[in-house]
Image 1 (cartoon, helix red, strand yellow):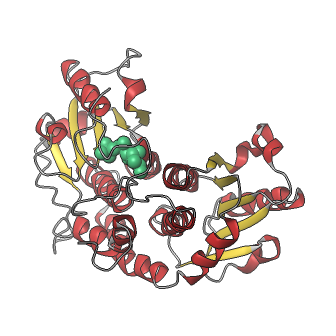
Image 2 (cartoon, protein in one colour):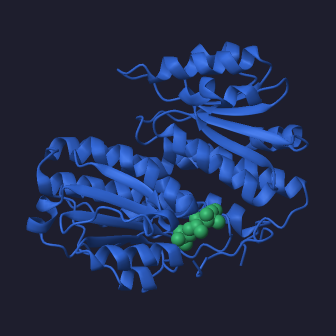
Amino acid sequence: EKAGYDWFMRKEIYEQPKAVLDTLLGRYNEARELTLDEVRIADSELKRINKIIIVACGTAFYSGLVAKYAIEHWCRIPCEVEIASEFRYRDPIITSETLLVTISQSGETADTLMAVRHAREQGAKVIAICNTNGATIPRESDAVIYTHAGPEIGVASTKGFTTQIAAAYLLGLYLAQVRGTKFGDEIAAVMTELESMPEKIQRVLDNTDQFHALATRLSDKRSVLFLGRHVGYPIALEGALKLKEIAYLHAEGFPAGELKHGPIALVEPGIPIFVVVPPHGRDQLHDKVISNIQEVRARGAQTIVLVEEGDTEVEPYADEVIWLPKASTLLQPLLAIVPLQIFACEVATRLGHDVDQPRNLAKSVTVE
Ligand code: M6R
């Protein structure tokens, strides 16, 4: 059932183009309207929402962090993202104008479920983004947007993550449509780009030789760092989580701008640092990340840089360049995470670990 792959995780990494495509399918019609039929919450209710809180755990939490950037940008509604186990116990401010969005691959995560119950008791509407039909979280929510990733067996979530981003983006665009914060043309432009992502993910997957060699070179390292800014920051966190979970390596993700506030003290000669470089844009993000790369390189770090094709500015400061197909800032996470997933899988395989069932971890965490 692993279809010729050594691990379910690897199979699931390679299923991502289809998983993302299936998640987008049938949700945007020829009249150029998002039709999230499953979201049975009246438009009038969605127009009243004045705050969104995304609640999730682990990888799903990181997909929520990515989604926040897009949702606030498109909808202009304040959006918080919180770890489910922290949310429930701090007396969060929830009203009938709050929309709680949960993200959970399994739909059975106890901490996330408790957050749903708590938020509903306070009168909030709850939308679940979930990969498992009929699971407890979607059953207890007002509405559900299913990710169509198919069953995810590997404990380390991969296609779960990319499809969660796709589904959360659909929700963000849907809210923008209902609330009129984005016009049809703008939504259409994002949808066209979203629909091009499966093919671009496939292109990343077709060029993986480099990751194998890199994993061999780096598998004796004790510690690996990941840096990013904007949506590249949650990608750094997720890349580090993958490596912790299955390779049992010390790995940490940081916002690149935080380096000088502490983490740069960790940089010593030879430490591998992955850096996600945002595409060139009107903002200063790109150049800021380039200078962060220079800073860590000057201290002896081995820099592995994920950057879009054609952006050669970074090459002089990169020990290794991983080229990504071109994408806008908000959509780049769907590409940038893929090499990091493969890298973790490769390192764990070389270290002789059980990639699909890492020690101490369960696929779904049904206790608080
Ligand atoms: O089923 P869920 O999406 O609610 O699970 C949440 C986390 O337990 C899960 O993402 C976990 O962090 C994974 N092992 C990450 O690879």
